[in-house]
Amino acid sequence: MIPTLATTRLTLRAPALADFDGYARFYLSDAARTLDTPADRRAAWRYFTAIAGHWILRDFGWWMVDDGTGAVGFCGVHYPPTHPEPELGWVIYPSAQRRGYALEAATAARAWWHERGNRRLSSNIAFGNDASIALARRMGCTTDGAPLAHYPKGSAWIHPAPAEVAA
Amino acid sequence: MIPTLTTPRLTLRAQTMADWPSYRDFYREQAAADGEDFDPRRAWTLFASDIGHWALHGFGWLILDDGTGAVGACGIHHPPQHADVEIGWNTFAAARGKGYAPEAATRVLEWGRGLIGGDTRLVSYITRGNAASEAVARKIGAADTGTASDHSATCNVWEHLS
Image 1 (cartoon, each protein chain N blue to C red):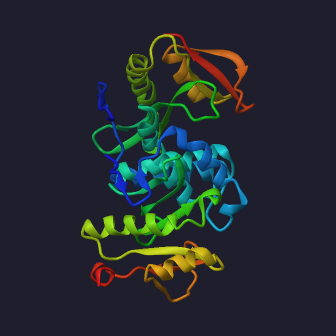
Image 2 (cartoon, chains in turn brown, blue; image 1 turned 45 degrees about the vertical axis):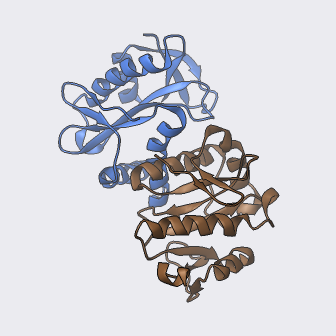
């Protein structure tokens, strides 16, 4: 049901029970401070099972990013009804950062989204999250800088449409 | 992967996006009853989590449909903070008082036993004093162990012996 994508170094795949510990540890750490985070491990379980649930409900969602050693982050498109539109997000756990994994995974996820006939995509990035802002720029995104109603600590970075990405 | 079960009056099925408004309204009412703020983002996480559980464990929650749409939820689940596999049930406000919960739970219990086997302990964690839930538990053959759960001091462990 959840497709698997392969990039040069990574596999984007369905979540498995073995991924939960690393996922919970990330979300309960300081590294997640700019995100909407669960309050505790119990809530983190809800966030984690919601990944697969989103796929079942929407037929798209987040993948776990696996570099061959296990899950090193998660990436994909999600669209809770509380969001104004589908959003591409990426998280690479601190121990696996600085290897270009986020760009590699996000590029593959966006290509998959475009191949499904979708045009519009945005990424909500917190003000001051310099690493993610740099990545969004590298992917050709632009922002008007306005705080989002549903995520006031950040703004929407709009991705180029499929034709612009290919050019 | 997610089965459809039937009872005399209900279909127990996988939830879909069409069930989201009913589910969201149920959590809004619960929040109001508990005197808490309602966050629809949290309700969405719970909604997606309830069906996502199936992908991780091979069992989870089903929506109760009486032919008019979603009127409740019932299923077996095992989040990591729970010591045992639990069967739980919710009836949405408009459908209460019709006996849907014991009807659905009886069917889920029967199906669940087939899945997890007779040796695995199956419980329900019920807040002490929640008479409605205690009545449902008793009706489907569970017994109050009298001991509080490990994860919540206000919930007793009711054991399903069949």
